[in-house]
Amino acid sequence: MEDLYAPARSVGYVRAGPRTSAVEDLVATGPGTPAPAGRAASEGKGMRTGEGWAVVLVRPLPEGLRRGARTQAAYAVWEGSQDEVGAKKMRSVWIPLLVEAGK
Image (cartoon, rainbow, N blue to C red; front, top):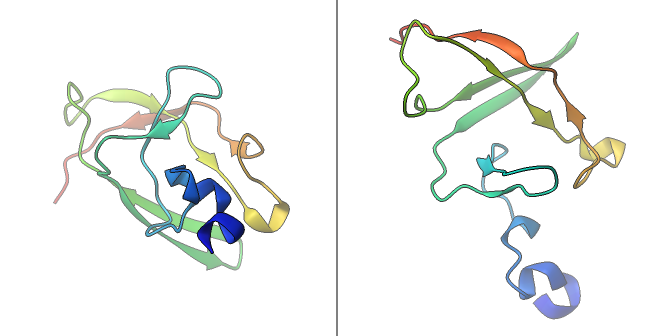
């Protein structure tokens, strides 16, 4: 039945789902090359608000990045209700990021 109803998953394409989390760690070496990271380290949760979405992402600091450091981050978000899949997504610009001490 998987061959019929989930052909991508039946040939080993792990990104076809089913998803166990709304957050996914990916590694890319260029456009069109995202692949699952060897070890998922991120967790997250989103909540719909009256003005849009509030999202919290939590992950360990990458190697070489220390508390008090300044860097940049960018995000990609897919909204299925807008038929966003694969390369069709919303991308942020580079956002300045100050790494602060956690609790």
